[in-house]
Length: 484
Image (cartoon, rainbow, N blue to C red; front, top):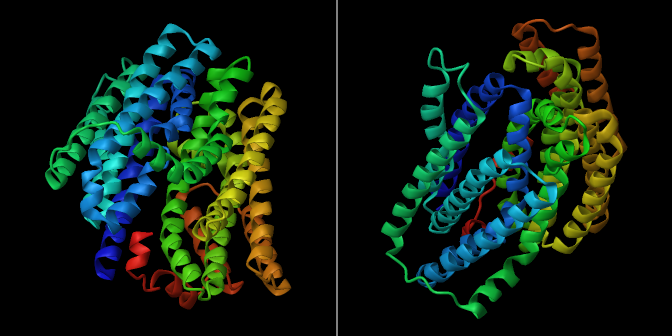
């Protein structure tokens, strides 16, 4: 069981590391280079709205499914038809809300046209995620891992073939990218459905109101946490386009920095996703989790602080390696986003601990406050500063929310914060800041040297320790972890 769990997890990480960065930087970034910042900004605004409200297509059902299939596989399979029918109903609500928002924003015909394909894409994406939740619950981790990257692999092959063909750069349009995404998501959707039905059989579709309401009630707290977090972390693209006189252009500037931010966010999610079952087991069994939390905090926050400082000092150089246009105008928002990434990582780490503890009411309250802070900051900053203002609003929001979560965890779990550890962390941050301040990076080789110096600094200041690292990744999960 343990071998199956960790082999599946390792395959998931390897496939995501190999495939998704290529899709993000080799395809998505190149599309922005080809179609231009303003055209991509229109797409970025639309995809931001569809992503924010994506929780309406799921409503936390996937979390319920993973647990229920693992615990009661035969019963859960019999419920498949009812859950699929419920998801169709939820998608109709999702589409209605999306188009209502488009009407409020007074989007034009072209925006509605692209939005329609993006809404269809979310139907495919949410269904693929649902099928993955069944395979996860059945402990078919390898199947789930392949499905997690199949759409991106198809995008690399299909879009890459069109995008990198000679003479296609001038004619490539943003709607082409959306159409290709629809084809790739659609093919991955068909594969996921076929694999699921081969495992479960063809279900009988039926809508049961009491059954549906029972599932929604159980999933609601988790759905609310996800929705609120998405609102205060993903609304920037929509608000930039609506609040700034040159909204689409500013959204395009923001997208260039946000793309790297989002790619790094994926790795933090994998890290905290590994910690979630470990925290769940230790908390349920009332065993000591503080040593693992301490080592995870040092490793994650130490790494993100170093990364944030390096990106802050070398923003134009890094973005220049990826993009062909508007790099100086995109650099300021990227700088603030990467400093905000430290707070984002702290939120995920301590939010994972609180979720494992079942502290959902607190998380929902904090997330609601985060939305309020983010909206007010965006309203004040975007009209004057555009993409940079939105990025600074993200920095403020993430810092405030992470600080509240850390203080709450310290009090609730009686965590100590030795002054020597604080001084080590401050010393390490000052070391990296000085390193980047005095060394002018011009080539990738200099980045490699700084990276080695940072790793050496983490060992020197006690933020990285092989014994602590081993304790995170070799904790023995029981069957309860896999079911959690």
